[in-house]
Length: 528
Ligand SMILES: Cc1cc2nc3c(=O)[nH]c(=O)nc-3n(C[C@H](O)[C@H](O)[C@H](O)COP(=O)(O)OP(=O)(O)OC[C@H]3O[C@@H](n4cnc5c(N)ncnc54)[C@H](O)[C@@H]3O)c2cc1C
Ligand code: SF4
Image 1 (cartoon, helix red, strand yellow):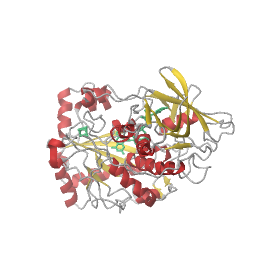
Image 2: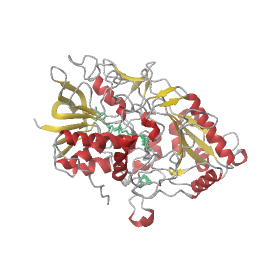
Image 3: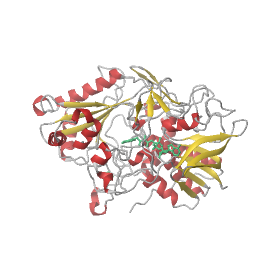
């Protein structure tokens, strides 16, 4: 049996980035991925296939606290959820690393400050080829380098919106985008600026996802092995429970056992908790690394809402996710608590409405939905959900995932929605510019919409209240690490992927030092 220096379980934002960082070390690295490569096929860019038929959503069934089943929005592929993500690659605000008082309670401080993460944010922005513009967003944290690529330009309708917002005293900014767009030389641009990006896989591999910019460059090193369609089902330890000695996997219907000096779990927040909880043994009767009953707790996923403003003018924008606004991130003169982030979301289309609201749209003629889509200006509002111990992932005897979740911060979420409406009214998108009766369509994101899941194995200094130490190593197990969004003690109100990537690089440096290798910052990948 081959033994490895490191086994990484899960190839998404955390695992894929970590493997790329470790690859040049020459250490024997095995990457396990339960899914397959996401096939490049015309359906990648078909809204009906992606949103109505859920072609790329896992067939899993999870259960809510009432035992009601649902299909979670999770994606089992090389690259994980980043294959489908909108690639809005934000840094958390510096204040998110400290304690923040919210309407519904405290968002706790992280055990490290923003300054410790900053160099890794810079490196992650370089690896993931982020396009952006510093200095436009007043809440932006300090950065040690400019964005590696210029901001993606706004389409005319979004530029108009940006200008109007700025003229009204707001601070719209160019959203940080992980797309390989070269607007100065479009014939050579990998990205073709299409309408099917946010929520879709990229057919031409121009999205900065963890397959294209994490796993593929890592596999250029002969010391890195990828096993696809290989699901880790349990981790076994030595008798004292201090070291993981075996990774048990299911592959082609058979069980196999793999070994490594270091084991890194990065299955996504819910599935990482599931793996640890399913790995109970004599030394860890309540689940691996779960002596203080923290594994699975403090699940967060943002209190999000998609809002369509139906403008009387058509909105012919193709790539819409270029604008953000954080003016209400920490509150306002009228409301002292944080409200969150406003950003554009991918341009909506008729099949998306059918996919998201099958009952409501069942009788609607397609041309009505198409007309709606032509007039829609689409926003995504994220309010931080406060971590709570009872919002948690548990696993029953049959290994089924139960996700118990009670929303928090409903008041700031509603305030943020009202701020958006007031702001749009101020700049002329008021009643006579909006389609009567349907001026705004709001879509609340249910528990199944777990795209931004985080927080089930939080890192911290106190083993009573955290699963991982500051290096993201389990307090109770010397060679076990977790590098997906599970480690977040709180989620902030911006998209989480860049923070998972940056942290994977930070933990990667720690692992390189532990293995006696110098941290070697890899060159950004060349994508032809
Ligand atoms: C539609 C959509 C849009 C999004 N848009 C954005 C955005 O614009 N910006 C942003 O920052 N974030 C966005 N996100 C969220 C972002 O993709 C995630 O935060 C990020 O990918 C999480 O990284 P992760 O490493 O925690 O998990 P993942 O990326 O989900 O990776 C987990 C991996 O582990 C594998 N796995 C699971 N269990 C096992 C097992 N037992 N054995 C082996 N492998 C296993 C999975 O197949 C998967 O590949 C979006 C997500 C979705 C779904
Ligand atoms: S906009 Fe660019 S990165 Fe996004 S799916 Fe289209 S081609 Fe790919």
